[in-house]
Image (cartoon, rainbow, N blue to C red; front, side):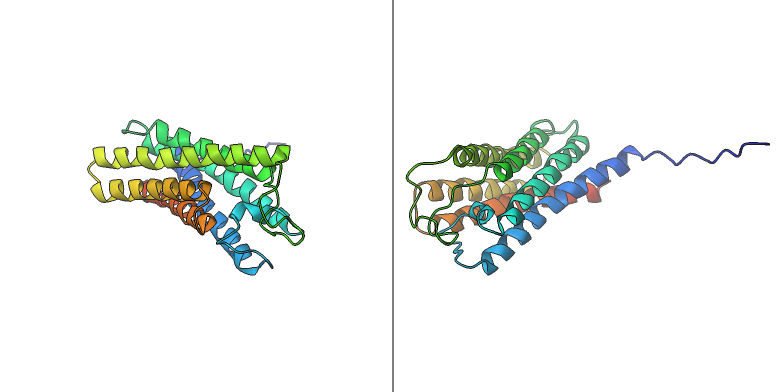
Length: 221
């Protein structure tokens, strides 16, 4: 009796693996944005001019935003590996993926450590800021600070990367995205009017730009 040897499945080529990883980076920001803004528009009592998107992790439907952070963060971490492969040997090709990866881990931590309720959301929460923060409230603030700082830095490093490679329009867009988050976060932390909205605009702008950069590199493979 002879044994029939089936042909082995072809191994994935490096470019195919890189494309798959970059697809993760492409999907992360749109997923997080759509899920967050859909909840912001539909959950009772939520006001984006007063409540940060992280507050959606509270309440009976809070698990949706927690899961949103965890999945988008994991996609970002995987996507950073794709950027590392695609940008290898280029200016900023070392630090951009590292910073994007840190941002992804920060998002995962922000999902694990839930923000304290406040500002009247969800129903029954204090109408102002909590008098004292819980341990997970401090954890969320720390995770958010790390994630935002890394994302801002990644955008500015991309600005240098594109400037050095002769893509001036992309360089300007990178710096605009980083500045949008820098200003939005600063305005929010200072207690400025509609600070949570400014932060949301800045965060979404910077995150979507990382997705756009990943899409650009994926097209080139």
